[in-house]
Length: 374
Image 1 (cartoon, rainbow, N blue to C red):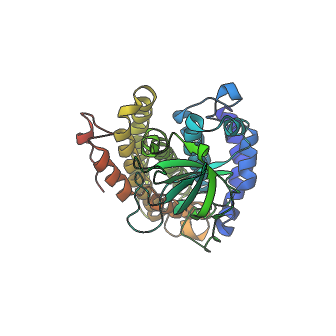
Image 2: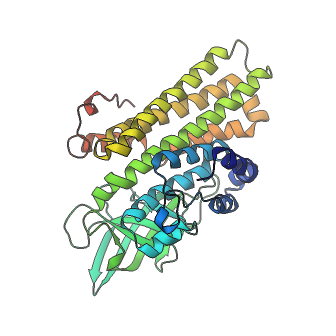
């Protein structure tokens, strides 16, 4: 893992300068990701035995937050990549794991069905097995790095009929995998290439199953969801810290609205600090007792979503017209925060998952005490 100082220099030289154009043009940050890959970032969590960094969730979160301070779209791509890589590291083919460890492979998650009533742990996408081949059909919404990733961790109903879900390794170039053109504009995170991906059908060897047919829900709860929630909080913190830093600069220059902004800045910093406390607790629990970490990760994600929306809204109010007149980065923080919270899993999805898993996957004496307020 590169040092914080080295990574900060890379972010400042390769990620930050391209962020404004990437947002304005909705252009995938391929050059920034390539530079980060050369520094070992894409391989950060891969097996040391295969040449990767061998690091865990906490280290990945530090990288994602640092990148999010400069470009939330790039950080969102890393978030989905690391969550998918956690699944592939545990259940993927060794050749794919070697590519991940070499930093040559970008993966992403395709877990949320398009359409109303989509359920993470019981997908509507279908897989039909015949003669050692699986026909995979379904539409997945909000897939980050769609059309750009080298692979997708794709969920479906079990091919054999038992269990709630199955996960598949789907190569990005697989015939039958379609990615529609991205719609113009968008609120925020315009460069992360989040859109719907369709399998119609994708034919896969049966041995591309990840974790066993019917075991997908357990893999999601044990690996994909904890990483996705924890790194989602890291993206939120990065956006929030960027907004705080820029608001403080406007305040120091006397460009804020009338009155003393010090109390409001203190309130913003305290909100971010509270999320850091929850982050440390959730990540520590996941490292030594992952079976009981999910409730804390639910709480962390909800708290981070609330904090980043409140902080970026307050930053615009304090800076008044300056946020829109000249500081496009501050305005981008405001938009990215809202786009971040609208990507799955949304607040409603997380609350629903917390309610459904409260007695099965996330039981624990502290769970009922969590204020899962909307």
